[in-house]
Amino acid sequence: MEENKNPYAGRWVAKLKGRIVAQGGTPQQALLASQATRHKEKPEIIFMPIHFSLPPLIQKIKDILPAGQEIYLVGGAVRDLFLSRLSSDFDFALPSGGISLARKIANAFKADFVPLDDERDTGRVIIHENESRIFLDFATYRGKDPSTSSGQALEEDLRARDFTINAIAYNLQDDTLIDPTEGVKDIESKVIRACSPTSFTDDPIRILRAVRLAATFDFSIDKRTREWMSQAHPLIRSISVERIRDEIFKILNSKRVSDSIKALDMLGVIEQLMPELLKMKGVEQSSPHVFEVWTHTLSVLDYLEKILFNLFEEIPKNEFAEALQTQLGKFREQIHHHFSQSLNIDRTHRSLLFFAALYHDVCKPDTKTIDENGRIRFFNHDVQGADVVAERARSFNLSNDEVERLSVIIKNHMRIHSFTSKLENENEYPTRRAIYRFFRDAGKAGIDLILLALADMRGTRDKEMTLASWNIYLEISRILLENYFEKPQETVSPPRLLDGNDLIKELNLQPSKLLGELLEAIRENQAEGNIQTREEALTFAKEELKKLQQ
Image (cartoon, rainbow, N blue to C red; front, side, top):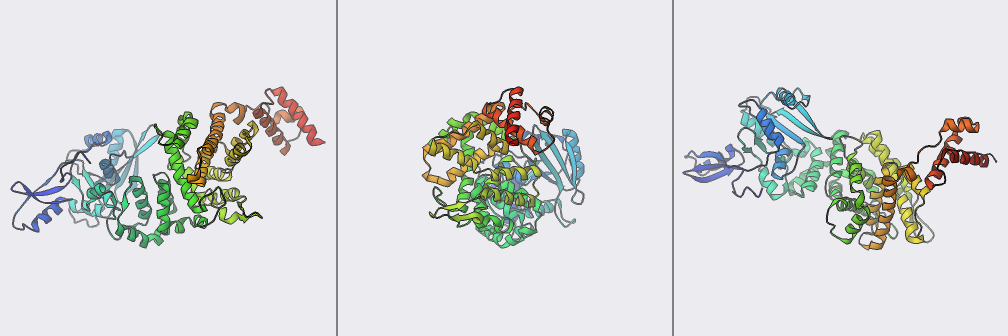
């Protein structure tokens, strides 16, 4: 944006005798503005150039287009051009032939083609790049009246969109803009503004989208737009669960997650979609907690975001970030790889971890007790919470793998606190057997649990957290990660020396639960370093069997 110093850059202007007398977001707006004061004169309507760094992909599409093809890049991709952001979704609007042009583009790129909507003549091109996908959608204008001109149909299309910042069209033929709702100005002012008073009643999912965009771009939401959002929030339940889920997980994958959750709560959306979360409000906790449960949860989201940022930033900004990098920095690449392995192609691993963080204490209100010393306890809130998060995940139609991962994280999220408590209070490090059992139960979720535990403790003590206590948590985290990444065959997943058939044959046993118990006991002793060979494993199994039979 700073490259376009001309105050009229990206605008249509009306010129009379070489002087600019009016301006607008479209040629028609500039003309009408001019005629308001100079109705007898006929101005020259021209577009004041704006400089974009077009993605190479868009330039390739321009080269492929048939001569004279009227087509506009619209929506979020145009907004992202102004914000110098990379986009993976490109929407194109044209008068007709959306499906046929999409097929032509797909053939040129040797990409996948999907006819999305015959009624709206919409086709999709899917380009696969490395492990990511780029979507190109080609649709005819949304104009309802077939008698309207092409320009009128495009403007009607844009005005029917959600927010002004998404209602800008870029003409691929002549590099001009059509901006009927002043979206460029709102981008410059960092404002989310609805295109019309009916934006949210037309499609209530836009309530979630407005919150997400505000957080993602660090924009504010226009006051009147917020009022419209609040009025329309009861309609959110009329939206398909898949659309709701997708927006929620986009929010969880964006910046300022806790601010977004607070905004959704203020708008009444949390009560509509995830009411079980609101039971956490006002539930007091004993020391070292400095917040009640709901505020603690929001704080954990904040700290999780900071921890992930601080882990990967090059220069730490404070002593806590410096300690984090010192202890865990060597695992950056492995943790990054861990997050790149999504359990579902449509949702990131990061967003799943934030969903777990949002739900990690959801059952504290249901399990709250006060002992004889007045200390507040929440026994089994982790186990019960695992069931609640699984139920909500299934209601959002998450995959079985995602449901399982969330359940494992919530069920085991107190275990690292147990390790750190023993080190802090008794100077006792986790044994190899304890490390083995942790990863046996957690699997790959062990990495998620480490990061959640760090955020959980920061959210527990907040500004009362000392660097000494923080380093204890980091030391436990480092020990666990070293075992997981650097010596998995020793403590995390020892090689199997015997199987069930071996025990049946060597010990004259029948298939039973006992076989599994013996095999697990062997592996635990391998992790402790007590068993290294098959012969030692067999000897141990024989001795264990004698004990069990006595």
